[in-house]
Image 1: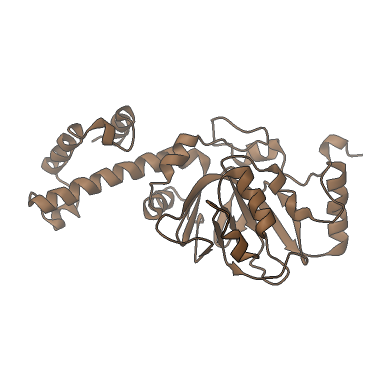
Image 2 (image 1 turned 45 degrees about the vertical axis):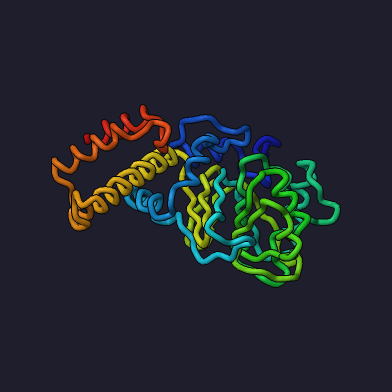
Amino acid sequence: MRSEASAQSIAGSPDYIRQLTAEWKGERFEDGRPKVSDEMLQRLKNVTIEEAWAELMKLGYQNQFEGDWTLLHDGDDAVTTGRAVTAQFMPMRPDMENGIIEIGKKEGRMWEQRRTVSWVINSLRKGDVYVADTYNKEFLGTAVGSNLGTGVFNATGNGMITYGHVRDWENMRKIKGFNIWCKGYDPSYMRQTMLTNYNVPIRIGKAIVLPGDAVLAKSGAVLFIPPHLVERIVVTSEFTALSDEFGKEMIERGVYTAGQIDSLWDDKMNESFMKWLNDYPDDKLPMPRKELEKYLKDRNF
């Protein structure tokens, strides 16, 4: 006979999440999710999708990108970073929903109106990004409207991502600072879709998302970065930005041609770059000087 401790839960257990994200060696939340630092998430905002994606591809993570989004507020300043809280939704099946609601009752969740869609939102905290797989359902499958959208923003201070549709577009656009990456708009409300579980692995289009993944969402594109790779990707991207700045400066000054900068650098060019880096003001660097020196040592420059 199964014990109460081993009974199925709506949320992935902390032990399950720790096993899925075992390569993360840092701090964790009580729910087991890796706690990528606020500093790294802030620095991640300045990383381009291309820079981060190139490093992920090189490391073998080829299924972390999804494009073709509709944004509540689009533009060059549309950027969100945070720690993923994942949610999985499926088409309605009454007997399964009844079972889910019974589990929710035992866990003390709100169930009277069979509104399981709010369960995940009640678990969110500052710095989270709500990531929901609503399997791109339109009619009677919208993930949030203005009330739940307000709840998401108040809890996280962030936007949300849903592989599906949302409703109440005009009112949600009035929530200052809130943004949504979705597949479209539909005026109907969720009635033929049910929450199955959250803080579990989900698929967002072509991307695999785990609880605690670092989200990098920009205009038209989203990357889900494994927590243990965030620092490497941020520092590598910041270094790439510095080398690009050096290259452009050298081309403009006529020191090197565009062809030389775009090719494998010889020893003289590397020496020139190192001198340029040494003279770079510390307060203008995208990372602390010690981090840069460690990176250069590891890269054998």
